[in-house]
Image (cartoon, rainbow, N blue to C red; front, top):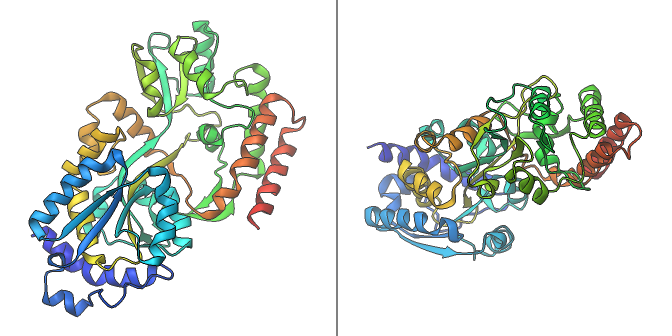
Length: 413
């Protein structure tokens, strides 16, 4: 009954959204009108093509089999290399050769909408069943452009043998590490080109986010990382570099190896690093604030996009909302890929694992990685400036930060 209600509610909405949401998106003559959908069962006609990578293949195929058994709609699952999907989708959708649905990351959204290859989806009351940050990540101009299924973010990974309690602040963490007498204190991968992704929660704790953010979680291309909050963060980076707490010598490999060898009680990292730490007693905790405000990391969300050229937008929306957004499928995707689910019920079940629960709690305080095209202009200036300040090459940290903001603004303009 609930699926029937959702289909009816989604029918007119999805058609309208598809027509206006894809830029050059025109569903073509085969797309049903709202009147057509009232006279027939939408999912009884047409066929779907879905692009997935190897990791997502099994759970999506199982969902497709269930969809075909219930609706009669055939679903062709095409396996592709994840690295090729975005480029191929942008190239093939305008020619009519692309899929109806593809898996993808939320931070592709700006490029996909700019190219007019994706359409909004209609989640109905299912929108409230997902983690807030997951919906925010796929939202643009008040519309949701993807079905989220997984969330990933960094957190503070703690060696509980060296640090029995989670630190409340950055200074607490440094004090605990100093008392432990380890070679390193808090390992943050940096390198000579910096690493704004891993430093972002420390920066946000000074109240210096990269872009202006709307209430729905989406972003405006207005830089917010400058001014006094940015100066305070820049001066803090310099102080920590001078103290030896942060260093451009700490690459990803060095950080992971040092933590695995028990040379530091803390590491700022993601769940993708955990395979390096088998045998260690660890906990996953909130990243300690350095500037007094909440340390909010970037959150990445994986999901499924609807093509702006889909000839079966209603059927595709039905498959997304009623077959991929179930607890069983989201759990299967989690078990296949290791990324915590975006559907709250599945996330709560996965949180029986305290490591998953730890990352999930930190992610709930995080913010979506900006998906607006202007984000591409930020990374290089941002990272290099961080590295120059930490290494002491920038004699005046605040002035270096101001120059970085000016350079980024120039690149955006």
